[in-house]
View 1: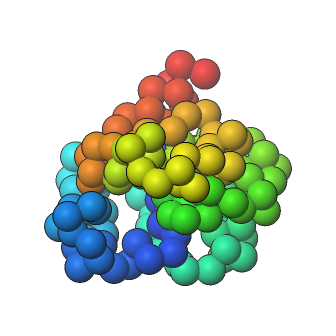
View 2: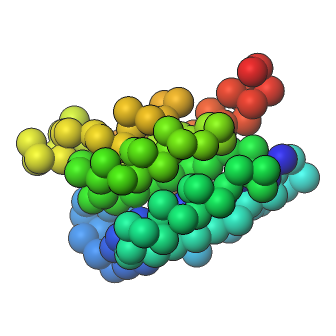
Length: 144
């Protein structure tokens, strides 16, 4: 099984950027943890970008390459109709993940535009949100 993990804007700064909010795990730690926990079950590819168009391109190009996508769109989650449209344009299941509990954040972060196209959204479990996202994708695919 192949899963694409897409990380959006500012996630390249994890571990340094507001660790009191986002935790001290960086993407390298999160990615290697996924690979080790699902070794022999899932092959992961990782993309990190600060650009909305790159996220859209990765989603649109995922068809026939990936069984699922774990997406952390960062702040784009709250306003990117273009990313939502790309999620809806493909048959690849997408699980959106967020490190923080969106419900406990600022009001403008509670509007989850991109999640509307996903099979589910996981938030609030820090780096573990990615692990839960992988479990959700695997379960969805195996029970489809």
